[in-house]
Image: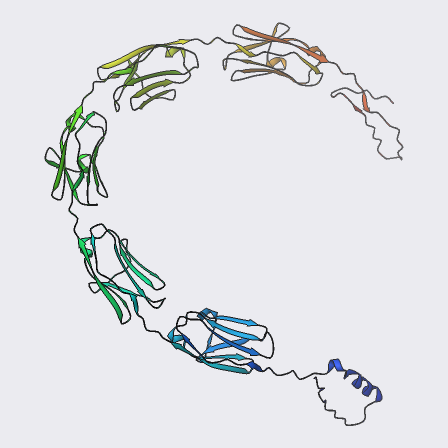
Length: 518
């Protein structure tokens, strides 16, 4: 219930009646302050005892909804940043903590406005016990070492040791924890992995011995004799029973290395010696030694004389076509010498010389008549020749002139396209040569010849022709004379003395002389 506040009234002398009336009017119910009901704790916090790793929930209910609260542990403010979950639903305030640890025990309190409630949390710590301890195992080299323990409490961090030295994760070693299961896994066991392993959780520990039996090295796949053509690639491969064992390669009893032009690879247990572009002198006895094991094989290199599998052949081309000469020989890696009329040929803007394995090519772009003659390609004393014939390209009219009908005063353009670029041409009107001196514009762009005449008059009509070498094309120009018509005739007008008289007409044809009459 809202209680009106008593206002003190001090009067030195009686005020006017109008002033009393205004004062009483201002003291309405809406303007009077009221005392708010105080907040109370309806349900205080309660003491709790809980096992570690469980979830604890403190709840406090107050008499007013949605009031801001602050939580404390041992007098220090806590928040969700400290790992707590804090909820306020209406008038109920809750603090939740998962996976409670021993150090989470203590006094918890909540403060809502000027009210406070507190409770004590007692955490019962359970001792760690091994449900499944470590056990001795025996493995052979390359096998996996798998050690596992099971304890009674999740969320514990083990310390693994080998011969009293800490073990940590590496490329070969994996340490994993999954609830109450803890494992140490070592891939591809070495002899050095044999010994005593221990896992400890604080003062509680378990140990076991790991025994690693040595695996004897054996040659699984020996070297094999090979016969190969020169310029080919030879590969000797030897596989042993152990990976990444150092090996030494020999040719005719002498150690060889990559400095001698060989490629030497060891991938896991496979050892490889590779030699590209084998020559006759590369033949001989090859051997590999891995620890106390050895394997050997013989390389026989067959030297092949150069032969033309596909010799040069005579060809005939037309001007502007491509000249393409190609030979195929039986051996890659050879360097040809090309000649034309017994003169060396080299690469230029028009000429390309290419070699691709056993294929060798000479390519000349846009053949000229001067390219006709005898071509030869030689590999040492072995050679092949052929004749190239270049036929002259006859000039043709690709696009002839076309008849045109056009209104006078327009622009006419005659175009003729021929098959050869930049050939001299002559233009004619009614059989008479015309030029730019006669008012024409004459253009030649590549193979296109153009005659242009602006502001065509009736007398420009007639027969037009072009002659390019021995070829000719003609067409007729018809000029339509258009009668003069008024598009905008004169109109009556009235002006005042001293004003400007402005008369204007618009006709359908430009450049016509007008005659004005009064």
